Length: 317
Ligand code: GDP
Image 1: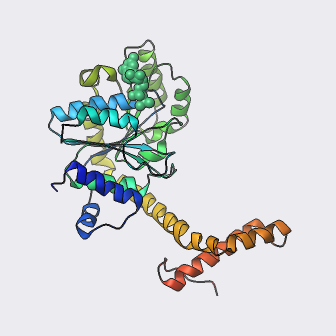
Image 2: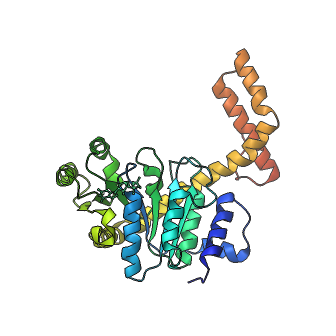
Image 3: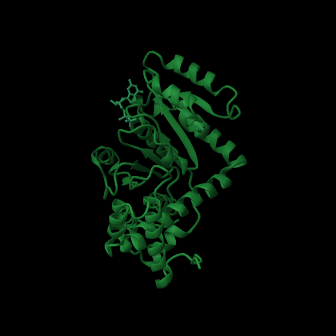
């Protein structure tokens, strides 16, 4: 385990988020394999995700675990640290060195977790935090892309969110390991559980569990969740954890290559005026937009093969 203070950790994650060069000692922290449980928490806004994560922090601290939370806002490019909600939470846990809370943007990526969030969770794992919760924030729909790259995926729902039952039926549930019906104190929670169990019946085996919680009553109100996480983890460990991690890393690698290409050679070709020139030709009707896009791609690719920085892709004859 690496003895890093929370301040050092926060600074390192800022470096990662801004894509700044890392010192060799820092690089080692993103190299080693992640041993911690990385748990994604998604659900509609207002279902109680943040409240639940707060309750779970208390539960896991009781077990002496070091707990980390990364709150990901998929609409934000770079947060540069804590947003308001997290500052409130951090205030509560400020004196507790066993809790690390941090907000991060995902640069608009919803098709797979942003590389910097992946590296941040590696760093936190190497610093001894386990579990690491990746919580989606923001006002959008259920953010699946973010949790897709986590080991374990939790969907938080609450009664009076009937629309989301449709989403659940329409495939969201295929990706989820555990559903928490929060706000169990409100009418309709039992009916929601029943409806979910019906929807789950016959889908992807019977291993997806549904548990109830009243997260606003703290760890006591969410006491059903850690045991449900444990059993979901056991099922996953014995079936597909490694495969899931490989798939997530594959998606991450693709994202990294796309980012490198878009921010390097493609940006260079655009700056050099190639995109504008081609756009003029498309507007004049000389070439089609798809031909122009292929041409722009080739120009950008030629820069990387010339500089030797890019991928080794054979040039067309
Ligand atoms: P998020 O947008 O999913 O992160 O939701 P929040 O955690 O911000 O919670 C939204 C609102 O629901 C807040 O006002 C919480 O106090 C409230 N809330 C959270 N958990 C419960 C619960 O178990 N019961 C009730 N009645 N309200 C809750």
